[in-house]
Length: 248
Ligand code: CA
Image 1 (cartoon, helix red, strand yellow):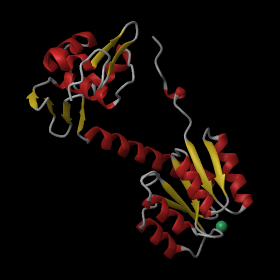
Image 2 (cartoon, helix red, strand yellow; image 1 turned 120 degrees about the vertical axis):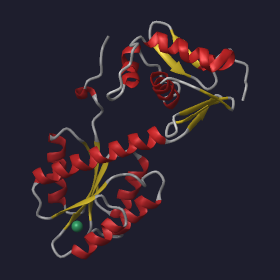
Image 3 (cartoon, helix red, strand yellow; image 1 turned 180 degrees about the horizontal axis):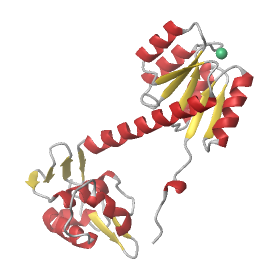
């Protein structure tokens, strides 16, 4: 079975908002060389529009821009649910120290001061990307989910089925939580295994089918149908599986 390695990961996308063409080209060239997808905007308003229309991983934001300045761009990004957690690195000039403080205060993640070394900037980008990924994962890991009559509270480690609490082993819990969180997507047994084993947890049975069977048993005669077997591929979770009478 093919495993998805780090080299197959999607390219990270950087939005550069900068009005000085020399710096813009320098950034574009070096970021592309480093393997990033790069989009650019030469004023603040267009930068905000770009950020809202596409999923970026990080924004490099010049502070002195024609029209609305970098601080206003940052404010608008933070005020919009689509971009509120989009990482922003400010690109500032000497003498803008007070703006840096304001920028960090309104939610920019980091800054570099012109003239900056490309090496340093790339290192900052990596740190910010790593931090934002960890934050996103832990946010989605901790949020309670309720689908198809199954409620999962990851913080309390509790599952209830149609309102009644049901006890799951740690391995079963992780597997169910993962599938529910990624509703509709089919995962092979190989892909599921790491989510069952997790960090430092000893799992007696590495056989996914056994865990699935146990989870279904605990979900009961009706809810068990939400865990769908996809022949020759693996498993998925469906809130509204085909053939299941609608029950809430
Ligand atoms: Ca500028």
